[in-house]
Length: 204
Image 1 (spheres, rainbow, N blue to C red):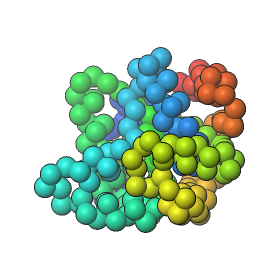
Image 2 (cartoon, rainbow, N blue to C red):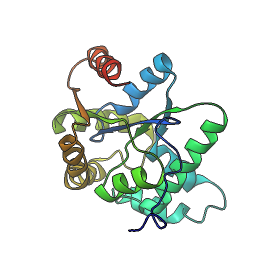
Image 3 (cartoon, helix red, strand yellow):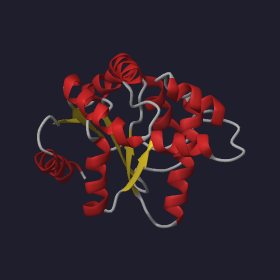
């Protein structure tokens, strides 16, 4: 690839700090991100929330497609997710907000590579490592009140399989670059958060 055709990322790492937050469904990513937002002024961008908002947006050309992918526990085409993330980052940068937790993304190797090539290089991955049986219990509990179409046992099992097959290779790849902080999260929320704070302190 010549210098002329090389893609320049939309933002530089000096301008924007991105921490990827990964973990299986029900690992507690959202809860921990909420705490980080309160204590460290991060902007929390959950890929799933952005997709659901787009799915429900009147006149969205992608709404129906997103809905079908989510229902099947599949990964939405990356062009859509990347465009939504880029727009959300741009909006926040305009308002002078530069630190981002990107939750539930990248979920596949090509997403990770495209994001770092086209948008910005990440600082590191915060990986919430949680046993499957713990996640299952949490999701079934959440399903009683969440109203989410994918909080049922059939969708949950599909989501676990998708995570294992496609997201774990991303984590393994970033580990080769010493760019992953693993946080055990089968313990009380506040204990998990202490580990998260230690990780943030060391790396930001």
